[in-house]
Image (tube, rainbow, N blue to C red):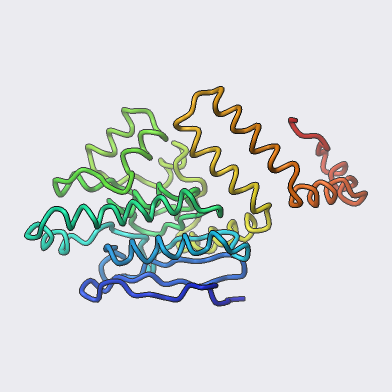
Length: 286
């Protein structure tokens, strides 16, 4: 069932490029659609700001339990609008600095969102489009999708966290290959490298991402938010600091109503019987 998004309305980006962000709900899942199909869903600063605002607006809504980001039509996103960038070269650099900051706020909104954010990729995810995929928590891609850090092809270094995401996910040689070469990479190869989570048939990326989002939406909201925070914060912590952060997060979860209800349900006679039949265990690490 499609429902309205709480406190969020559809918005249009700069009319000059035709790029806009469309938003709608499928039950507990918010679907954000990059809409500029005539230009492979090229994105612009207006879309950056609208998307960041939309994602941050969901943080206080328990009714939004997962987010799917997709592109309209045959492609996810070809990245930034090169025509806009060509015009931008005649304007002060400070203005473009503000545009990049807006893009980076969008990416930080994805990381800081309590909900899991899934990229559903069909066709091309190039340049900023690839960076945007990498900023999402999970990626579902069509088997014929293509990914490229194509900045190098137009004499640019990446923005949108592309260098950070690839450097953390891959060995330096592989990250540098993608960043320096600019040749498209298949969904299959990225899946083998652990960057893409699921590869599905052509045309099924959005449906598969939505099904996964609906599954995750049934999970414990606060715990999922804590897990995201632990994973992303681990990058800047020592092993001991991460262990201490895990301890505090576990305690906060254990003594919450959410955990109490789920433990009680799990220990119910019916659930114990189901776990026994499935060969499952009752215990947990702590």
